[in-house]
Amino acid sequence: MKINKICCIGAGYVGGPTMAVIAKKNPNIQVTIVDINEERIAAWNDEDVSKLPIYEPGLAEIVAETRGKNLFFSTEIDKAINESEMIFISVNTPTKTYGKGKGMAADLKYVELCARNIAEVATTDKIVVEKSTLPVRTAQAIKSILHNTGSDVTFEILSNPEFLAEGTAIQDLLNPDRVLIGGESESAIESLANIYGSWVSQDKILRTNVWSSELSKLTANAFLAQRISSINAISELCEHTEANVNEVARAIGMDSRIGPKFLNASIGFGGSCFQKDILNLVYIARSYGLNAVADYWEQVIILNDHQKRRFSDNLISTLYNTVSGKKIAMLGWAFKKDTNDTRESAAIYVADHLLSEQANIAVYDPKVPSKKVYADLNYLQTRTDAENKELVTTYSDPYEALKGAHAIAIMTEWDEFKTYDWEKIYANMKKPAFIFDGRNILDKAEMTKIGFEYSSIGQ
Image (cartoon, rainbow, N blue to C red; front, side, top):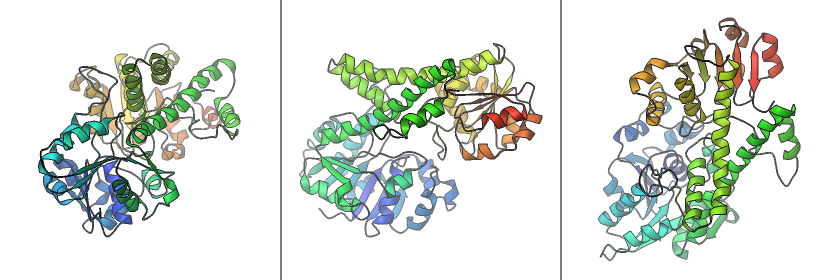
């Protein structure tokens, strides 16, 4: 099938950047991203591209280049579906918070709503592409919905999982390790492969069956998260044996069988995918009675939660076993640098723990707006919105956030934190002045020389 028009349902962290790059590399194809969230679409259409709803290095430039030419953002979902030959489903698939599989299984209600919407309005043949992270055999459910419409429309289902790292998503899209396409129809697979082929070499475009493609996405994230939990487990051992986790990581990373990536000890992983995908994997394994497999992967999550709690417990015990009424300044709220995504950020859970101990929290993040900080805390439902706003203050100036603080907790590895005038910061803090470096980004010797009581991970 020749593809002239693409529709992407979902204008989020995956749909936005992916479609922007596809539009840039395929100027002959009209790409329309649709979403029911009018505020989000308005932000994508803002003349000032610095106000896009998603921050990714390089994204604003591509949107400015393609928007209004062959890249469009709209709330007219039915129109875009009907006019396109290929439809990407790129909606949220959060972990279920209710019913069977609560806390583990993926909630597929948004995916099913998309499938039913497509079935209802499509009048011509479509290729439907799963772009959201989905459990194995979801394509079968989508296929069942689409193939029982009673119409003559033919639907081909493909799985095309994303392997993007937030903060480097545009570079990951422009220079991917691989593009994975799973499907039954060879012609449908090639239609999508040709779109990617406009900038990705064919040897990097893998063609599999649908189920292998779906499982590969979950497995890739599980393996990456496993490495982080593994080095974090070693970091705790280092702290009790006078070993240095950075030296250990460098030593094992030089082994070609292991490699150096994802071996930075930290406060723990966050983001929308790692925890969700592992929980999904655990749920699938348990549903097949594979309890040993489920227990193995669940331990990755348990260790990650332990690392976050260990960090906040260490902060409290170091501050003489009480943070009540003390100002704790948190540098960073995003789950990693170069993104404004806060989903499953360690900062949320550490702040929640400290607030339960009656701390006063000051937050500075260069890209996360104030309303998002409060929304993240309110989502936990540990306390009321009014209580959170009374105990948490957000700042647009880092020096103001740090002024008068008893302790600083570095939660995100933003590069700008390394460039601050730390002598000035020290002078304006309560003494003794504590730094808890959850990302190991500052120089311990330098901080100690200034006068800080410095604590890091695995040292």
